[in-house]
Image (cartoon, rainbow, N blue to C red; front, side, top):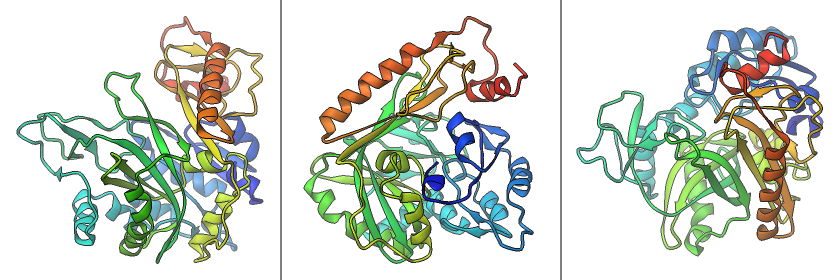
Length: 375
């Protein structure tokens, strides 16, 4: 949607096929895969070839979002014959390889929680994280058994903060600091990403040092475009967790109205053009992912409010624990935005019907089949 608002012709593929994305895209397809295992690589390549042929005489621009961090080789295959507006597969590979990323932070003198490649003897106070994981669903209390797809990180207490920034490979321009919200409704998913609010109240130390540490990280990894840095800030000290090397939830947090033109800024930054002026956006704004607390169904006569994004189709069935939609709010100050967000989440929850049919395919996959007339 952000690309369309900023004047681009859009061909889009994603897992869900939500109504607003379908309406915004000039060409659209549902990609095979699921939230747990990600995209089916061969199927996504075939879909991309239909939407944006690599053999086109005028190469299509290629922008990727959340979901490809664990598949840099797929990014490499998708970029062939297309112009990549985003971080290279090698940059993503280095950022998501714990031994490379955290060793680089050590060399730069940037603090982070203790990490290790094997389970600690005493798992108390440690977390297990999937290499290349995103969205927080892969973060669990440390387990005792070794898992070659995971690494272990010591838990540190504090406020999770996201720092959104634009980069040109040499330096960064900070867009803003936002609180990160987590959803703890699932027993085994205590760190699932649930949204965020800007501006965040952060320590003076983090605010004072953010520009310098971002510039160092940008130069080390050659970051370009719109990215975000995840940090834990306890009010007096901070620790770097990871870099999200692509546009993501920051588009909804900072630019749900399109006034900041963040997608166009992303393209510009990839072309080595960083903004010189302050971006126009609401004094305070937030996005929140609403997860289903029970199996539910979207009523056939649903008319979604304008502040709902990622809208499932009327009649869609959504599994317990699956994402329903994204709720947006903006205002003059953070406290008012929090109140508005709470009211809107309750309003959307009240719109949904219980689904007393037998449990079917997970969440949005079942939704896609419903829309296609197969369920």
